Image (cartoon, rainbow, N blue to C red; front, side):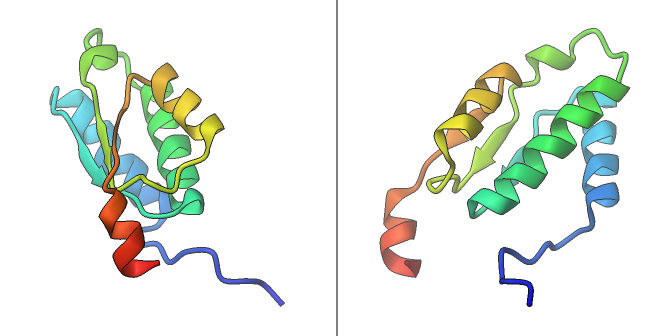
Length: 97
């Protein structure tokens, strides 16, 4: 039996498609991602989109992961590599946790 981890609003392919589009349009992304599994998916898709893109300014877009108060330390390290900004909302954990 598979345990519950997350429910994705969009499939990975669609997420990556939106990210590639934003990178090509030189747009900063602000993305809600709750939970470490969701954060893993976002980081994987963002990294894959960056690798696909040949836009020179892509490293300066500074995307923001919103509500990422449950990320792990290794995910924070990956966010730093990707120049992604964590937006941590501690009361969210208290209210929903």
